[in-house]
Length: 292
Image 1: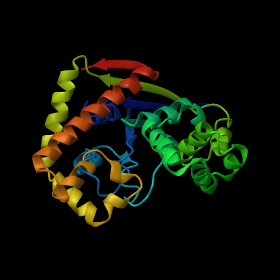
Image 2: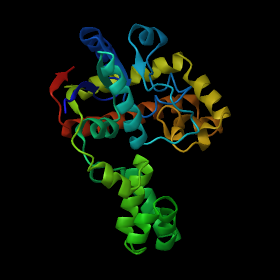
Image 3: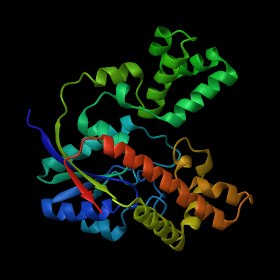
Image 4: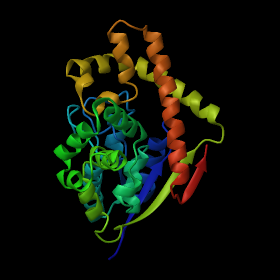
């Protein structure tokens, strides 16, 4: 089977991935597919640094605005949509270029690694363990039975570690553990990826860019965007509610902190996220490293 050439531009937030991907698309006659877990939501524009209307007119962008904020979204769903777009773009003689910072999504898509072995969400795992401690092993096992009956039947309620792992896979990928295992056996990876990683030699420089980006987001109307989304129920959504740049506003809207604290919290949380991204991409295979 002839593999489809796919390029990917990865790196931490505020590293200039979008601008680089657009330049690459011009060189390779390509189109950009977003690899960002929050840019898929309609209305989340400023806070996710979504490509502008001008940029999207210049180079076609895909997987932007494909879901309502009330919808959950998973790595499994991303892989389905991205695979469809890659095939479509390739069929038109264009070059697919993935651009984004959600390492899990991009790695699973382009490497063909097994979902069950490579999907990890430490925060979710901690929450599930805390749930088991508070509500009991049976309650946790019941949650698993509701979304993955096959795994629940195979795992004893007292084997909390395996119950948590099965739940983690289902909630993170959108596939049950058995489905994930089947997907991992579906032949070889259909892509021939070229992964370009952007990084910073001086982390302080990256943090400075992050702080500047957040300041610009406020100037572009981030507060108004978040307020409008909250009126549509953002705070109660399964996935979108946890987006950095949005969740930090909740205590401000409740009168608990000043606006200046919101900006400071967004900057801090974005810096921490960038650090985690750098760690992820440093462990992931890449073909070209660009140090900024």
